Length: 138
Image 1: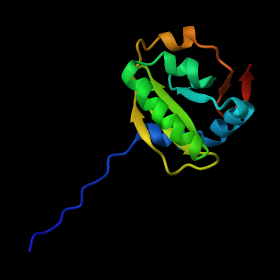
Image 2 (image 1 turned 120 degrees about the horizontal axis):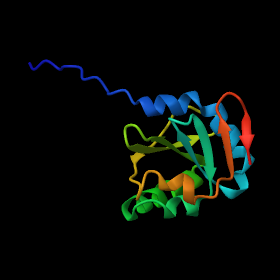
Image 3 (image 1 turned 135 degrees about the horizontal axis):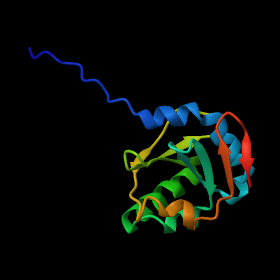
Image 4 (image 1 turned 90 degrees about the horizontal axis):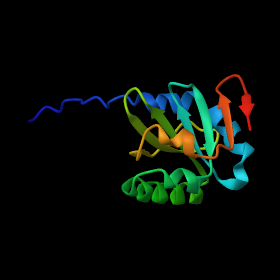
């Protein structure tokens, strides 16, 4: 009889960040809930940005736009929030669909920017918040 070995599931450090920020993510989303925004947490700046969906989508590569469109449609159907984590040091952008007030049941996808630095210069930011401080900038 073959012996089964237990394989460990790799830890997702970005998901852990999203879970730790859920109160702030929920707060930010609720400020512009009627606009159904997309949220982005910038790891180096330690800020959450709230963006209009279409403007955010238009700065992604064509492939990533298709992925986001599908994820966003499903998130809206399931009453979830689309949250991105951007790590410029690791050159990563990952997205999650999270329920409000929950830290479970996520969908993770990888996106690619046309340019990693473009997003903050070209987007109309609805709201920014520094987690835990409730310091908001409209």
